[in-house]
Image (cartoon, rainbow, N blue to C red; front, side, top):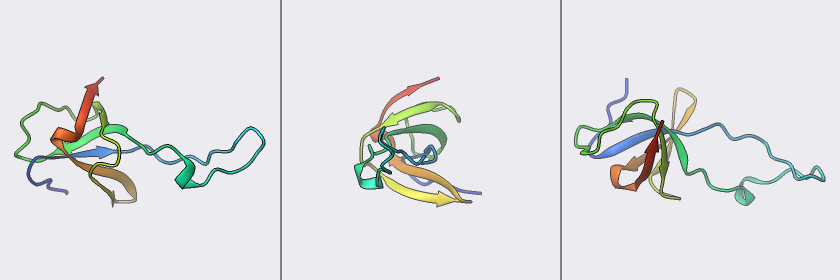
Length: 87
């Protein structure tokens, strides 16, 4: 069980897939676009926005902290860093 504190939102980010160029060159992680979307997994008790678990979200680039829970990747961001939510 994870308890999220304050006004933070836990967002599950998609697994990274190996990417190759058309010529077969493997792209290194620094060259890839930074992940800025995922699905809402939970939120803290001080959050003022209305979120639904599983709802898709886009958040500010490079915001929050990357964390791993039970081998799943998440980003813990402040609720004000969530820019868009959609189904």
